Image (cartoon, rainbow, N blue to C red; front, side, top):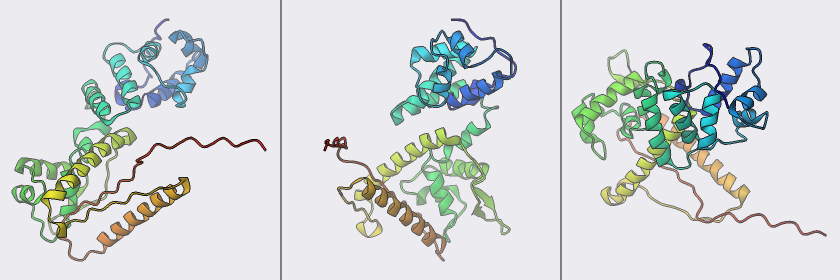
Length: 289
């Protein structure tokens, strides 16, 4: 097994959050050079299958730790970039949110922040800090004051004055808050994308936090100020699809309702959770007639 020479046109693995996307970009860059192919890559990685790289790029094969090292060597990676690639493989294939959080923290240490605009700290924060979306909505309230100390006290649960001040700055940096002609803060359209891997990671953390807040509200918020209810249903595949569609329609209705609000004052969180309570049994085999 030999390492491939690193070419000047190779994409930088440190700028990727999806190892399959990196491998695809590497293949596209190197295939322009004579003598490079899926078969050539397999030889460099010591693989017998001539199209193994293609299967991995297409998502039809995962990489074990040992195979990730072989791929790194075949890509010409060493040192920090080799470590980044193997961590990236583990991150993309992690099964739990805790694993992804730990591996993502390691990736951030590997990555050159100045070259990774899509992974800037402020961009990472929108859904990793529950109060950023809350403050962005709070700006639309008739009662809103651009005073970090006041904002910190008004949120539930409360945050620190420093966190509130940093949140205002971060929302402005993200392009999610702007100043109107009257000089007051106002919402603006989202202008930042952190990519599908980060959206999945941070949204998972955000939902977990908001579910925890909902649990706390059962005891901390008077019943007249909240609505917590649930249903336990038994559904088939088509019924499950219809329920999910109904939830999506209801979400849109709530957004329309909020848009039409004449005098908004209080920010509320509406959570939707649908998850199985039983395992799905395999479909019975059709009996021969």
